[in-house]
Image (cartoon, rainbow, N blue to C red; front, side, top):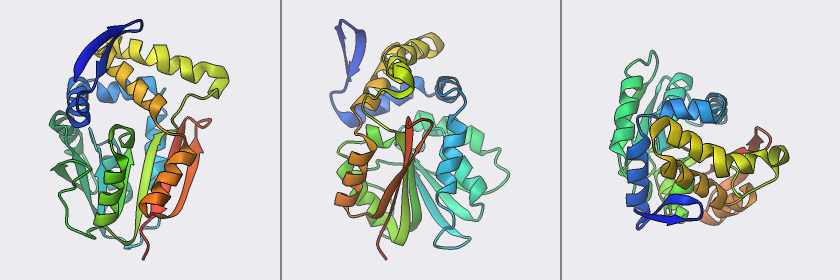
Length: 249
């Protein structure tokens, strides 16, 4: 990742997607959780719960395996472990500093178990048809090309398995009288700079949200990749969406 300067100030420009994303999240790992709470106005916890609830009832019954891709500091993985205490939760991320932060939190879990995996969503270190469900929260927009991740998810899902994506709805939109776009352009980078000293990193994250496709286009991507039963649910005035798909039995 290199730095460039323009009218908007310093920004990160990825030389290679994988290296860019790894460095970005390594820089902000320590401040990631508290900043999520602040910058989402506390709504992120409810979004993660909705993601877990969308998996009920699990096709495998009470036990099995759920793979959480781009698990980061294990925010979603821990919610999954609470909802599905008899399932193994495999939390995968290729940014070790993020996983290390999450490991400390996971040690306090009262229910469920989480297995940490280091790996790339485009080449999952898992055998074929080994997961009952796969989730990814606020990470799909950082994976390019997404088609490779979709193919890997289908490979590791068991027939009838479920795929759930929690992500910002993408593309600039006049939500909340335009406040959402101003938030992305100005408030998010400024808060990132103030709280963790990495304004440019949070400007990069805001840019990935603006460049991410609208929910209808993501649905089309998933159908083209081979998922069945594709649909989505919008949350919080359409700012966030949960995409649902299944692997055909």
